[in-house]
Image (cartoon, rainbow, N blue to C red):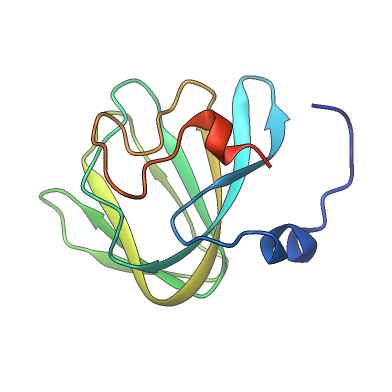
Length: 124
């Protein structure tokens, strides 16, 4: 991926589907992704070998971590889900997020659902 300025507002305007991340950049062996979340379509899943960073850019996101109390993330909040931790996210209203994930991270881990996207489908 070449050097380029990314304007988040413009990038988000081209995201048409909820729960479908789009790659907007690369840093070393990590993808920088954006996504819009609305509803409860993302299944419980984990990433066996990779941590996953969530940054809330706009709105609020319910973070559920297995065997822990759920919590609501707000604009500006950041949370790192450690590898192997079962989790899912949802939002009542549209929420805009940024994700930083290793290039080997599968969208919904080993769980395949209607929202699961391949890396090719996540390409911007």
